[in-house]
Image 1 (spheres, rainbow, N blue to C red):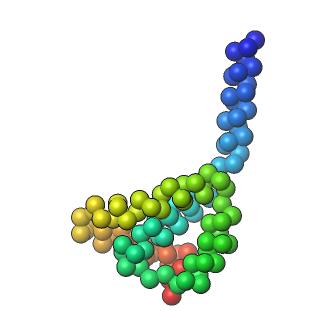
Image 2: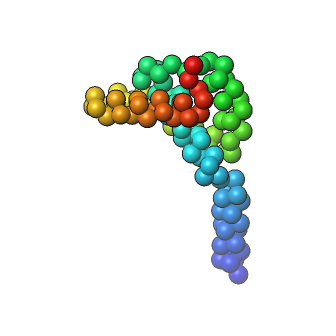
Length: 107
């Protein structure tokens, strides 16, 4: 009986955690972390007003799991970019430019 109650409690907790997770939010957080974290390393110019609006209007409204991912993924971008070969860096920075344009963050 106790094992059954413990199992039900674990399942209920997993269901509650899953209800807070959104794959779309996670992807938005990942893109935002890549753009913001890699902008300086890639010499990517972002429009300050557009970036502020995106952070307040999109990123700030993401589910808690996605926000945590943004906070964790953002700071490692510069290190990842520094460790890339020239070709990898050029390709990655081109990708970030495309993501920034897609999100409307470029001047």
